[in-house]
Each structure stands twice: as C-alpha cells, then as structure tokens.
Length: 148
Image (cartoon, rainbow, N blue to C red):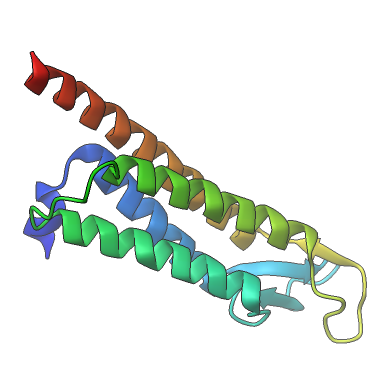
C-alpha cells in the first residue's frame, strides 16, 4: 500500500490526502453550543444526505486515484486531474452547504455554532481541488510534449 502511494505523482498524493482528510473529519466536532465544549455533534452525529453525498464524492475520488495508479487509461476526453478537480469543487460546495444548514438544536439548545471539524473538511476539499488542478496541468503539459 505504501509503495503504491509513493508511486503516485505528487498532485495525486495531495488529492488523496485531501480526500482522506475529508472522510476523517467526520470524526471531529462539526457543530456545537458556544458556551460548552461537551455539547457538540460530529459529522457522523449529524449524518444526513449532505454528509452521505460528501462521503460518496471523496470515496469516488479515492477510487479514481487507485484505479489510475494501476495504469488504467480513462476514455477520452476525460482526464484524471479534471475529474479530481471537479470532485474537490463539489465536495467544497457540499461542505459550504453543510456550514449553512446547521442542525436545528443540540440537547435543547438552538444557538448552534460551527466547530473545527467542518473547517478540516473544507481544507481537505480544497486540497483535493488543488491536487486535481495540478494533476490536470501536468497531464496537459505531458500531452503537448507527446504531440511535438
């Protein structure tokens, strides 16, 4: 597993780490009550369709990275970098939506604030996006070199 990860180009590694960070952020507090550190919801506690869509998106990105690491060629006009960048943009949009769509209440308290876990998810989404954009750039440069 380590050797396969090390064999990935650096942008693909960044995208994979970003996707894993998004999935791992589900274990951190996403929402909470301001005055108490104990009253909070993790991404899994407040699991709904938004969180499911987020996990499916990053899971598909990880599958794409693993599949392309085995020398699989995507059908034209698709590129791995473009698909990863789209996954990163979509996951960032989902996290943004989940920031706005906070739970109605936690243990009877209705003044809900964002906690650090959702910002970790946003950072992972942006890393996935950035890794995809860098990989896309590298793919375009390599394709131009092959033509000449």
